[in-house]
Amino acid sequence: MDGKHVVIEAPILSGSDFYNYKGTFCIVLFAIVDPNYNFIYVNVGCQGRISDGGVFKSTGFQKLMENSTLNLLDKRALPGRDKLSPYVFVAYDAVPLSPNIIMKPYS
Image (cartoon, rainbow, N blue to C red):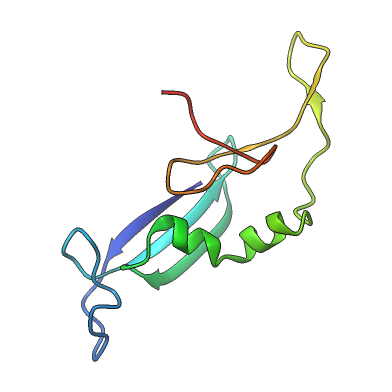
């Protein structure tokens, strides 16, 4: 789960809406991929001045997660283990942690 700032030409009369901290005009592509690098969710077009975390907060995916209606797979035991573990999404610092749904990678 990550966002990517895609550089664009400044839209007419947009002011600083699309101007980001890197000093370029851009839109944000926010995507979620599965373990095989297949896109399972994409949100494109948010103004570049908005952080990845802010983009995530405005997505339909976040609303489904908040309402517990994501239709996630049931918990399963990891290989060689008996204890059931939930499926989780791995995100970086801009996306807030969520109990049993979003984790951060270990450094």
